[in-house]
Image (cartoon, rainbow, N blue to C red; front, side, top):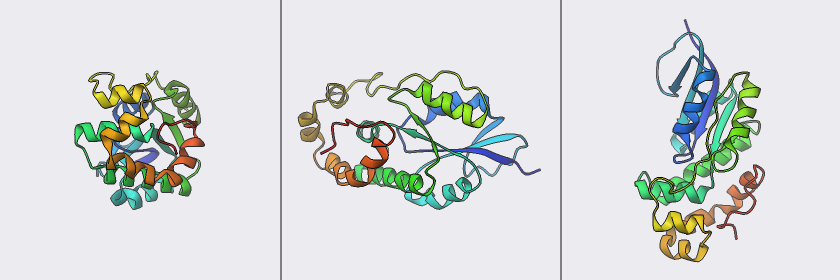
Length: 195
């Protein structure tokens, strides 16, 4: 029996993927990575990190199933990504640009803003998809392992961040003309890296 994908979660790394997946678990019989070949019967949510390589595969599934996206200030996710050494600034910002392309192609995707009011957003997602989701706490950068950069971010110390991150933050600012309209439309109106 072939399973039906009930929803797709598309995320950029360090935007609350694991926390969102945990909160969405009660709404589906199975939550599987997009590339997992399993075809269980029942309600299935597929998920994947948005990257240039995955755009085509995500698009193919989003053509047939509703999309959910986790959002976070890209500067916060960039700081976390560089701290964990998960990718370079150029790669991370490229992933955000791919997310912007997904939103352009699928403007009806539902958003969970993990650094704003994720509970309200998750309730909207659950209502739209007709299931219950337990509360999702606001995720704060550096909450568990503060660094000088996460403290500067919390204090909105843009001069320190620019000095400490140099070219890495310049890469993000170079993408502002694409990312800012997407983010502002979803409530991110006063991010410190906006020019």
